[in-house]
Length: 328
Ligand SMILES: Cc1cc2nc3c(=O)[nH]c(=O)nc-3n(C[C@H](O)[C@H](O)[C@H](O)COP(=O)(O)OP(=O)(O)OC[C@H]3O[C@@H](n4cnc5c(N)ncnc54)[C@H](O)[C@@H]3O)c2cc1C
Image 1 (cartoon, rainbow, N blue to C red):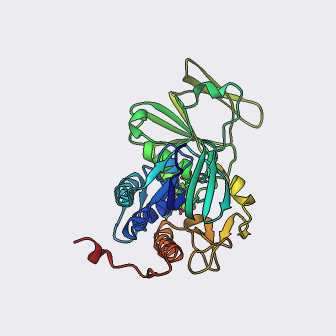
Image 2: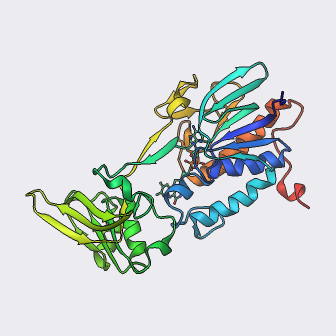
Image 3: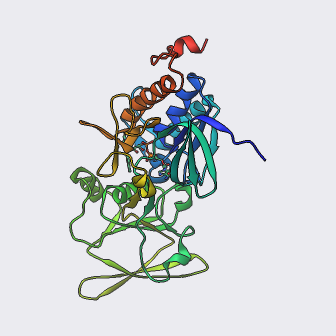
């Protein structure tokens, strides 16, 4: 029988917080594993806004989300972590000194856990029009991962929030023509964003609902819009991008018996949760005055890892050697 491999720490969630934690685990010579339900690392940055610039990471005046993820992955690999993608964690149980983590693919064994699961496994809110599934992943999108796909194409962006406006603006000079269509008269995007949109070449259609997508073999050809009076408008289109927001769910994590506050896990100043040996950091962790930002996760990750190190080996110090001393 294959002997079970036990890790020092298993990081649940390979977003920015989990990736930085992996690096720190390497600095503290811990045996690290990362589990994530998505097919790629990077969390919300890779899944929701890879082509957006981030302006509030210390030391970077601005950086594309996908470039930040690339850097983080290189850095995370210093911990030489075992990385398991497309694996959703369902349950955790203690078996003596070891936690047994159950996923949809199997079991993992670890002496401690760092929960960096963000807002949980997330899924985009779907268009919900009969027959639209045939276009999904081909010409019906729930995010933009590769701008070149839309080069010289006719694109309709659906939604009235900041993401919808941002995508429309990003595509303005890439696509042949961009239309933004919203079902309500009032948009929820920030006023400053709406002002920029109004000055742009993007055509705005509102208030219009979506009646139908017409096309064949995964290629949408026409988007049929409908107003409150039932009048239809048919738009010629190559790609449709839906921005109706995301449905997030912590799912089974809520059933682990951790102290929770709304949808977040309560931690103390060591990032310890209410279960000994389980730590939390990043968007999923909460305490009084918590701010949910990448920069904050970058601070909480080393706090969690260094305290977990001292939990696993009480003789080791919480304060690590400075990286300037570790790397020579
Ligand atoms: C459009 C947008 C723009 C943003 N802009 C900024 C900005 O400018 N500056 C800023 O600081 N922040 C910004 N944020 C917020 C920022 O993205 C988050 O604060 C950050 O991603 C939190 O990182 P995290 O690692 O804690 O969690 P996440 O990035 O959410 O990563 C969590 C990971 O855990 C995985 N996971 C969840 N549940 C499970 C499970 N059961 N099993 C396995 N894996 C699981 C998920 O798949 C995900 O990959 C923005 C967010 C959005 C949506």
